[in-house]
Image (cartoon, rainbow, N blue to C red):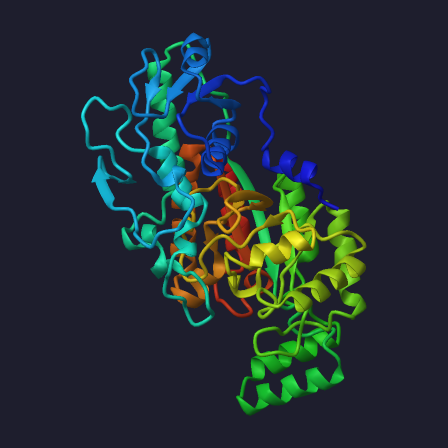
Length: 456
């Protein structure tokens, strides 16, 4: 079982120095303020901080000092606040973009001699809180917040971890302002995640399903698939989706944390896998545990909105795997920011890996770093961690229909961007992509990518 402490260790979320090394002055307090400070300073910069509204205490402090107010305070790095972090409502107005130095900013400070050139805390909060998903947006055919609804996509900055780049710029300015201060050194971290939509291509489906599938292949004159099915069922050829030993052993050898998410429902239009009651699942789970891989749930198409269905699937996976289910990624990435996280929290989930796009590579929240769910209905952060991903095989094989070499090139370009900010490069692959069974030329992409990532 992956506990919260285990996850923090895997994701390196524990701050090394427990004593505050940064003091922030603000003349207002809010949950939004505390939430964004924790992300910027703890998660990304790796230091601890505290907030005060006592000017005397602030001025006498020996720590790195940041003045988040309109006041003038000598010896402090100033950031003029926007009103976003002091509000307690959601408004439909989107922040205005500002293009400067080949980058994109929001909540720009146009006044001279008023400190940092934009309110970085409001800008970061807007994206990691998923404020834009709480606002009105055009859903796609699956009811999702997709790339075309994203403010970053509309301005063509979705392929860069823009939030992380802002924080890197902020860090550089702080080190220049406080010449004797240096932030802890960090390294890019690689995580591999896999969605198992169909445990096997041919085997363990039962006689009725196998005969029906064979008949459909013959009716379509797909004799290659028919022959492959017969060879697999006769034991003369491995199932093309049976990649569990190979991939898990590879990641263990390369010291890459690996998360598998299993669909546990079948028989619907969008959910087609081996019967969840089949002993085949336990066999795979035992193999994965031997290789130290993590097992999570891939909740079915309708479960993101149906509490009873979600509970059934998570309980069944718990029984079959023999351990509590702490991590999930929604099937088809179906996810409602207002309700789906609450289903997870109620059922003991500590981390969700859904935060990305199905139709395009990109950073949905503008960051490569994990961040907690912000519940605007309660105006507080919840103990559910979002682990964003930036590339998924399906964006290239299904939506963009990209050639394998072009897909690899794009993935590596994004990895270079992540390396700049010492963030997390998280990929999503599916069991169907590891052979050329469905997507010609993609069979070697996974290992090629991860071997090249290790060289960065």
